[in-house]
Amino acid sequence: MVDTKKYRTGMVRCTSDHFSFFAQDYIFHFMLSNYKPFSHDNNHILESHTDGFIHGLTHDNHQIAIYAGNLKRAVLGCQTLNTDLYLVRVGNCIINPEESAITFDAIEFHGKNLARVFVPHALSFAAPAGDGQEVLTYKDDQLEYHFEANGIQYTLAVYSTPHRMVGIKGSCLSNEDIYLRLSFSKTLTIADLNKHYRMVCTLLSIMTFRSRVDFDSVTLLSRNERYAGAYDQEWNVYKKSLPESCKKGSHFCLTFEDLGDSVQKLLKIIFSSEDRKPSYSMGFIPETDADVLRFDGDKIKSICAGLECEIDFCDIEEAEETAAIKALAKEVSNLVKAHRSGPTPLSAKSYEKIFSNIKHWGMALSDNVIELYHKHRIAMDIICGQISACVTDEDIESFVKYRNDISHGNYRITDERIIKTAYVLARLVYCCLLTRIGLKESQIEKFCKMKIGN
Image (cartoon, rainbow, N blue to C red):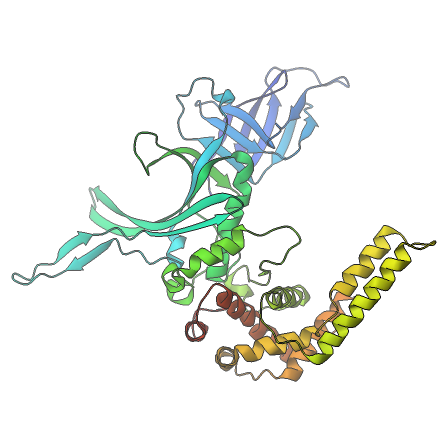
């Protein structure tokens, strides 16, 4: 995200010290405000607040908050900080700005790139009967989704805003500006910003099948106390990211209109993720257009991780052998517990490793993946047809064995069959996720023709 200004200057206060700063391209240079000779007893410390930010004031009186994590460094003349996030307050007429807490009730994302997941139609042309003159009409094209996660009620709204321009070169009216607003039932603090920014990027990454997500602008909003449903712009957010190079249009992406009410279920999955519990795993999504057909060991392991995650949520009939393995696992687990209570127990780490291994005893991963593959057989045939492939059960077994080998440091040569199987199974993860959020198989098969995994 590019700052609206080429550079920024100002002052920050840390403990009893004041530092001036010069910032450009997310690199901040902090300097002592008053010149002091360099010496070994220099005790001027640049330190972040408990919220992880350095707070200050620009020379044009805008409050600024610079993310620094748990920073505490001596400033010997000058100290440089390369950050990936800073905030600048919209207004500059605030009394005691350095004492103002940073809170927000909503985050608003803006950018033409949102057109890949939302087709703007706030403006439409109609030709009424009679003189045949076209009439331009406006309608509210906003879509709203409500969901709850971790005790917070969320509302995600996506909409377009027509833009009119009048100048000496002519006049024009466009409908390209698209906004996505995420609002909360309670006021959040600056400590919540990174998490929610990342969640929105995850949503768009899944919908576009590109992990690199950027915006033209991001703004923190506060509720307007006088007008219900209205918000005031409070802070401009600048998040460092690589510029997008994706050339996909909405016809190749999963749009909000495509997913319909299922968007709420997808949002709940993303926002309700808990530490060390299965939720979703999409680490194989390519960063750019050029990465779509590139497969290496890391991507293959990510595809397997996505399949293992989806298996936890799929209703796969348990085979007799699997039931026998689970019964054996229970016996072994009881034996290990008895050993742990015995006279010569192992270390806690050893028992943790053993129990972690036993927990995964059951149906072989390749057998589970084959079951999933056949559950979405028509969709998989469509995907296979796109690359002139025919993925068999033996190919899936070879793919899983390949992943197991490289995960344990064994050298393997990647051949065409492994790559084509990886391509298809990555799309299988998508099919499983779309099933989880309530899409019918006929819809999934339709999306496989153009929108999934391109």
